[in-house]
Length: 177
Image 1 (tube, rainbow, N blue to C red):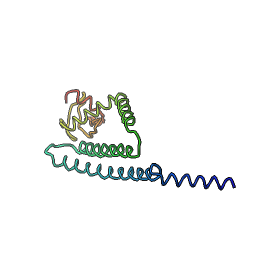
Image 2: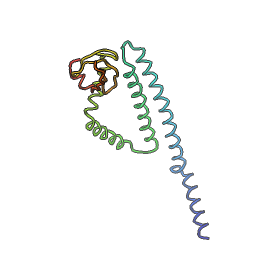
Image 3: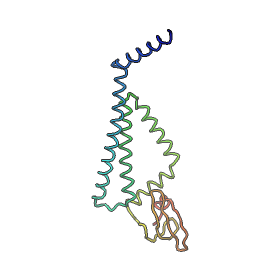
Image 4: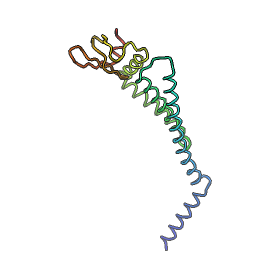
């Protein structure tokens, strides 16, 4: 019957593709290698994060917990992102256009978030140089109060009249503290 011959023809085409050196076996190995690289990338990224954490704790620099967490998490994410790029290359994808797209996307996002990124950079500088810490009473960006919280983008002050003021770190770093 016509349907049996088309099914047998389909099956023979499939088995021929599977046994072809450029077919199923090659793609099966590529897919397995893809997942092995992702798994190894996850393991290596965790190891690098732990090394970064131990290095920051052992350093003589007095860094804040927030800054340490930022560096450890950034190390892990960058290492895993690189493993994703390597894994995509193993399955035959051309990663050149992908990297160009990531660069263009980074430029667009950076331009759109320039103020936020400026506050972020100022937050890193504040956490590195530590002109103040949580619990200190400071005058910054025209406000005087007790520092109740710090993040990478803003500092929260508790004013003497119990008002809470959140000041972008860029305003603090650009002014007198």
